[in-house]
Image: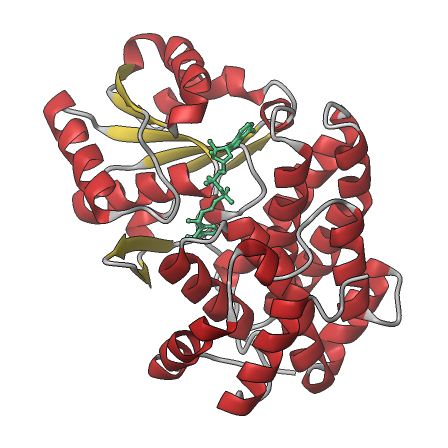
Length: 351
Ligand code: NAD
């Protein structure tokens, strides 16, 4: 066995009610002029965070949007500049945390993250910006949040359907980390445990979004899966979802949920160690079918067609996939990619 593992400098504060430690976290980092970021839908939560920060908050920017459009990033950067902010507090899902990263990328302003979904962006150095229907991503240590506050109480309001797809988004990180070219024993442990924690918690969350024990297990799983995303290089699945989300403006978490079983069916025969770990975590002999069935039974969409995609988009998708090389346990021919997309379009593995 050979591997390289580089730990990211992460501070994680986890637990129900940990939002109340926000002012302490800001002080610890020496931040006194934070700009609070959120989506329009989470403005009330952003205002609550601002109240908790007291004098350490210099303003709010509540226009975060999916996939970080460049014009939104520009407006947020200008707000941070005008307010004389010395850092940002990103409270929300991957869209809001992505906005914090976009500000950090150009200004170096440190970010505190308070995730309220299971997307995992807070654990990574990956930033993304969307311009003219194309999403660019890159890695930069400057965008890694300095402190991450995980408070399961904040996820209680995440609707059951979004919780399920967001949870499968997290599971997708673990699946690809298990066969990543830079996989390592510690990442594989986190991945297997992250999947186990999420698949046990999601049915309870879907049935009772207010169940705090399940919410805690789900967020713990999402943290582990996010850490896997941050520690490894993602493959075909993330590449495809990135293209589908950025080009066709499809909902990020739902796309991940629908596509994952088909990429698993394609890749796992070439990744036996990853498959064994997933069989253990999911307690199944058929990982792809199990993923499709579990998500659909919890109310997730069953096909890309349901999300509005059609076969006429395939040329664009395959051209984009070919244009940028990416790691994958199996070589991906255009024919194989079209077959995979056709199955995902029709929900071939879904019950
Ligand atoms: P999101 O942040 O867009 O959130 C979805 C919706 O749910 C938003 O309207 C938001 O306001 C609302 N919401 C979030 N938390 C809520 C809560 N607790 N209660 C009620 N409503 C809530 O969606 P997402 O799936 O978290 O993030 C997707 C974005 O994150 C994509 O742009 C994706 O590319 C990016 N992402 C980036 C990375 C990375 O490493 N850079 C990793 C994962 C995802």
